Length: 284
Image (tube, rainbow, N blue to C red; front, top):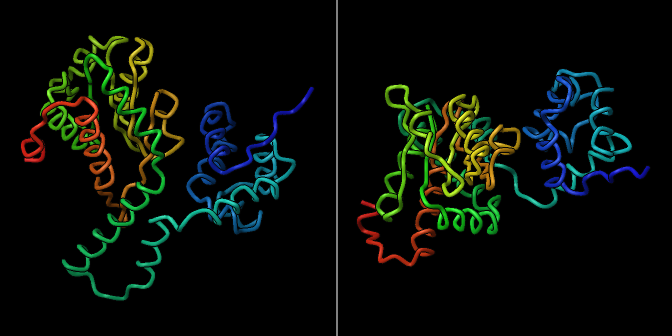
């Protein structure tokens, strides 16, 4: 019996890990989360160093590599190393470097400086990582849907509300599932195969958002999601999934990249629909 060849690129490996994540053992799932959150460390550190940081045994890393078709850890590590030659450091790495280098006292303006710097890197990362065909497919689904439902809870709610506001100015039939009165499932009851759900959720993922997204899939609705990584439960439930690494300073995260992506989708949809859109009203 021929064995499936291992992933030849980081993007392929990332996709395979995401697809098979739910079937992994607890230990291998732990390694998967570490590997995708720390790809540079996977590329540059030794097996023992990675094992110590991921809180696993070195043998578990070898088993993890073989699970995905590699003959050992070294062959898998080459995939992570090739990634380094193809991209710039992530905004997280740049922000960490900025933090380590800064000896300035904490003042209002230094806080603003750090957040604007983080937002700038997040936006650059969004542009580098977002594939044009992903945007085009999302816009096509939005244009073809009878009605657009939008859901985002907790930290994701401002993104959902902004999308609802902008899409309504385009003249789209749009419904914000805002859960007022605990009525989220009732608000989503009319979702059908002619509709689209735009779901936004970040770790730790809102249970109602995941449940309604799952129901939308069962009903045959198209799903576009905005989330924070390949291990998000939304990835396997979506027709189009945007993985956005948001700006973060300490434990505080902004929504600058998600808002930029949302605005881009709506403006492109407006042109796609060839409406005589009043863009002054859209951005008011």
